[in-house]
Length: 231
Image (cartoon, rainbow, N blue to C red; front, side):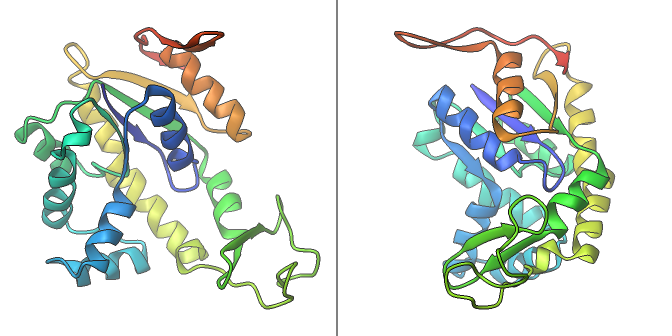
């Protein structure tokens, strides 16, 4: 089963992709992790990847296609995968088709832009430990200071307002078109599902699993094929 999860920045799609992959017992392929590994390995295009990730721009299609398609052809993806962050553009989606990598389901998490800004611009991090805070949802005891060490907290570059605005613009201009691209193929496949991304992680996860028809049983996990829905 090959699944693509689409959503704006801050929608929690990476968290949901991980939970879904665990439930379906297939690997999650997170584009940012694959691209970061390419940077660390100093692979061809590493400089362009690093620049795009810093500024919130999209990595050039030709680089992404090569790196991600190679990852999807590894043996662990033979049983299926949950894609997170790729394809982000219609040319990338077309490249998957050309590589004969077909998707069974495309899921879009829906989140208003105002909520995206609230979630992302309020995030703060303590770099040495990786501890995360949020000015609204999980504020530090002392403003802009880590609870444990008292050291300064910082705002990551990709959480700054101008970068978030750029990421949203790119999402609406390009990535959201990927959903439309696959919707035009929906008479054959993949199946299309839209999920409300508002609320707690467990609430969104419940909606997602409900749309898939995945249920827990006392003997383990069962699953039936989803139907197209707007939730």
